[in-house]
Image 1 (cartoon, rainbow, N blue to C red):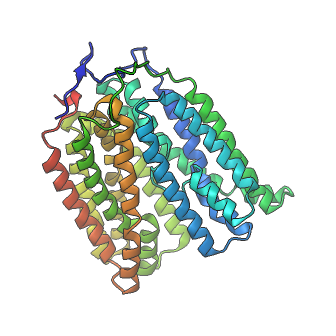
Image 2 (image 1 turned 90 degrees about the horizontal axis):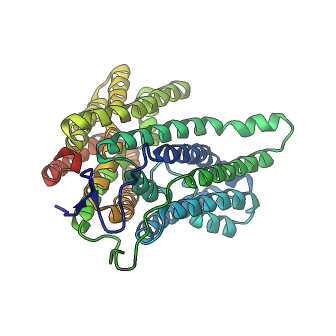
Length: 419
């Protein structure tokens, strides 16, 4: 287990990085900034393909743009995690907000395929619902600094909850161009107005990040030699396990579950919309419950002992013949399957030294995103072969294996608050 120093409160600290001792900290500013960002991501991810089609791009070109955006996001996320070990994370967050502003404005001025590809690659708009973003490793590291160890998991639960709710509202805001068209604005101008709003949200986020206390000053002698030092082995093991989990999850992404429901039960679009709304609500409200549960049984136990039942529910839903029963099991799965989100983030931040936190967040999140991108194609092939239930069964089985491996490998590595 990683060894590091403790401060007067018993929290782990490393060279050049200490807990912020101000009463209450500025964690609320991180929550607010994420809400601004996720609200923008919520409508931008929906409107991006619509906008690209409106400026004349075809399906293949739009797919390449989406791939470029995902690859660019992954590389930026990985790079910023290693850069943050020697830079003020507040300044980096403000710079990332500046990139968000530039991205929104650049899309409004992009009319050629080559320019769109460039903006997608270096910009902040991610067409997926994943958590790979240049902001994530920085926010995780700063949030961990601003709260005590005993409150870290609750802080990540609030962080995840507000982000999920903001993204849901943002998705609803994607209908705004239709309203703007009724006021006499052209459809293309209405779509561009939403990207201007995205840029404005970047300004709001940057101003919010500016309120965060500056990170501690470090001398050249105090700077760590590498972004990942004593906790390197732990981080790589976690990244490998999390990648298995993400690969499994790719077999049952929301679009594939929707396809399965339409195919097996002839579910209507309106019924599916209501189902996925409540599925999202159940996932969101499970975050604070996960924080409460982890304070009683531990972070790793919470991840494992909520994940396994959710995987069982998915497998049962895949094979049960009743539509209502299948929907009920899927909703139960939604109430359990995301409880590892705040606990996983909190655990990663807890078992590494503070200087390693940005790199640890990057290294454990980027491979997840890349692994998750591989399995939907396999699931599609199984659907095409008529094996429509198999992707859900494979997802559940692989996740159970991941949970057992996680419990075996990390059952004795405790965060500070559990010792």
